[in-house]
Length: 116
Length: 111
Figure 1: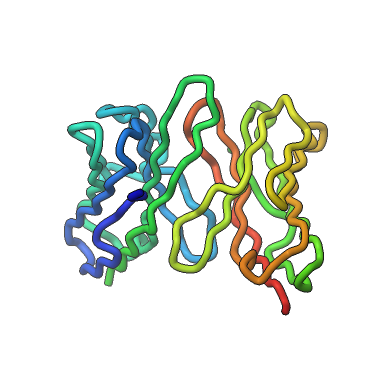
Figure 2: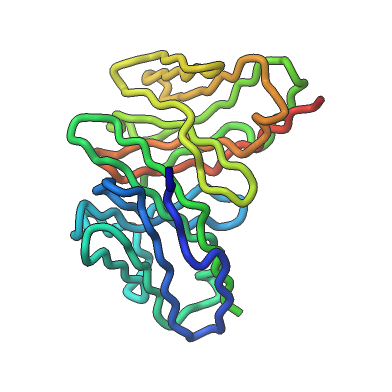
């Protein structure tokens, strides 16, 4: 079956530009997560959606970062006025989010963002 | 703040030997811990998890041990194979779905 997919796989942009990163979760998964992973580091939590709403956005580094999930499926991470420090691999994950259960997260391959 | 860290950044083992990867966590309120495996160019892959009301859980060739007294987590891989070569992360859930990852340990398996 299809796993989590992310597009594009690579994105190169110039400092100050706007970028959008897309995540297609596993069908039926109500929970969706965005992480950022810098070289040699573990994934850093950014935001978590339960359905269409952002249940926890405490990891977004500043107001240049924004994410949406308008229909409770596909999500888009938007970064305005990109900076060189935004360069990283952006990972998306999804899970069933069943209350009281351990919710295994399934990760996509990530989008490698390079800001020149 | 919350943090999950690892004792050793790299581990090299002989094929067929057992591997032990260690992790320390700082948030005593965390109630759910997970080990992930990440191969180059791929996203993390779930290996095994454990709730804080347990101290040991076994899977296929893997065992996770949790010592809440010293806030320590370990992953044991039996009969390590070349395909086990990857970076391993421990992670903790802090009250819900937010997951905090450690920095990772790279496992090298020598043939």
